[in-house]
Image: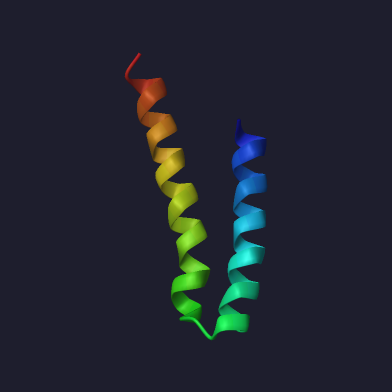
Length: 52
């Protein structure tokens, strides 16, 4: 599962960077959104494991 999360992070980070340059979006938001999404998923996974 960790490999899937890391691949999702890499792919979304690259796509976000390209889209922000292409459509002139906020660079700070496009750089921090994939990191925040992976962080939230990791916290949910940790919570799920510790709740058992």
